[in-house]
Length: 492
Image (cartoon, rainbow, N blue to C red; front, side, top):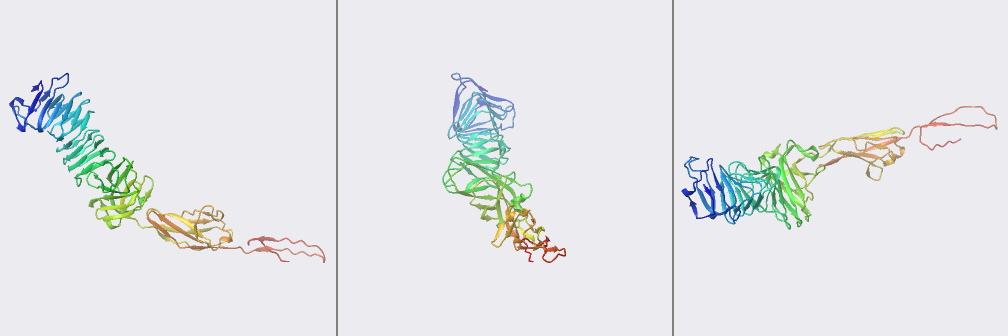
């Protein structure tokens, strides 16, 4: 049926007319004509609009039913054909404030150059297919289908409700400035990003939980002022693993946090200092872009039972930060069977959780060493630990232990950051010095026993040659000395 003039329909409740039989099985409904050289205007002035499948499943004589319960303004050229409403270039679909549009299983296709202005409630079981149209979402868009429903690329929703167990996908970046409500299903961003809120306003996220969260990349704006329990409802493909942030000090600026979480593919990196057998099988990443003013923050990370590898003692779990090249420890906060908190952090990064690996432990204690003058000396020690601990040898000259470096005692030391400390030709003057090794990693340190160095002087040896001389004659004496320590004294 073609409508070639302006028509206004009034009514409350269901409205059905044989004059408007829509045979949507392999046919279409077309709005055409012009008003002042523009597209026609068809106002449906009621409370909601429902577009239903034909009751008989598509028989040729089956009428479909349009239920009007809303205020819908088609200021457009629109085509309804086999499950889609198409808004063509140069035309617009406008939904008034306070109204509800029930799309049912029909796609809304926005052609390049078209316009969708939505200020009411738009509920669909199908797709909003974005093809670079101009869009204004001023109300609430509800996805309540039974198969995956993708958000339009670069969409900017006011309020969005997901009530679809199959979930929603993001073919491109999308945003929700007002309220994001999870009823059923999760939003999967893939390599794209979902932004919630706007500069200075975090928006609202409600209803998140098991099976209802953001899988992928969440960007959430942070409001100014006191900010606690700042929720980041994220998870991976199968599990909800949110993060929550408490900021210390008033937040300033108009920045946001980017957050995501993924399951690990193996134990945490050894450099983290976390146990390789008892850990939480995931990592969280939180980046700060432009959030200022706060002095520190305390993050809490939540995990599910299946994340626990090796039955870790959750009362002993610690959080480790990785800044891209450097691992650091954190101060423990509240720990529960399914969450762990860190206190007083100042920078954002990746976070890993597990029991701490054992601190370094000295395995081989250095022995006392005795050498003769001009001989080299060697001290040996060793320790266990994960990650492999760093070594620093120290010496005590009677005034306390100091770290050894390349200039200590005239540069006689080498390999002072290994298990084997070498002394090249130590003087008798260093005899009696004490030496020890300190082993350190991210989890702590252990110090070896002190060992003493003894440097013995060589015994002096000389030879004489006997010559006969006359009384009152002159004599010349030559002494050749080897060994011993200069200076030497000769008594005639």
